[in-house]
Length: 261
Image (tube, rainbow, N blue to C red; front, top):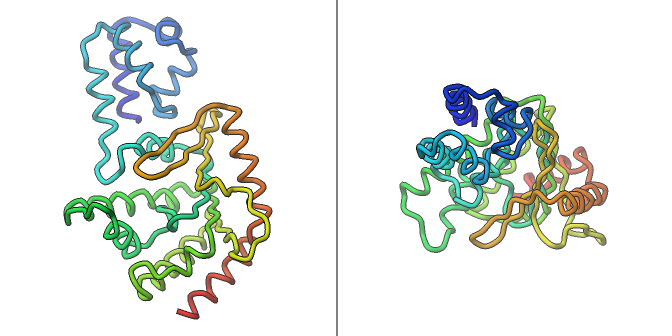
């Protein structure tokens, strides 16, 4: 994002325009233009097309934007969200399908991709696992950013890949949640109330104050920017946090599950 932003800035300055002059041409304030140029805000297709028209229609911005979207090992529908994650000031995740990617051990991630249908090639599996482990570097490196995870208890009891993989995954999660900025809450199987029955979701806030959400299904993902919809999903997430076990209770449960394996 920073490289693309610097490229936009270079083209704008070469065209002899200030951010204040450029902003109306791309339907943004000068502050939003600054955020894109400094890599704090993700550009979208509309911005690229308007910027191309304003800067001479050379095609250079389109090519740079397409290159920014090429992140080996990530599903095409997830790449926009993955870019937003890198600069988010908080990230909240609820997962009911598999242990969240940001908490997966390498062996567990490999088991997830080994179960893909159709089967993936060895090279594709390696690329997927490498990308997943690379994403996890955010957790210790961005230590000022809070990461909260709510995960269904059943996912930690599932023996995906075998008991050894399950033990390794739980050990990995216990290690990651020792970080001050990473908290895990388990949604117990015996819960009588559940605010997120519609499925998994993620929430984040960008450095310029935008709140966004993401939901994913079979072979697709949806980036949600509508304020009312994001507010509804945030309300559900907040309710779910009150229904789930506390981080301390969750850690105790995880240790008991690990001991039983």
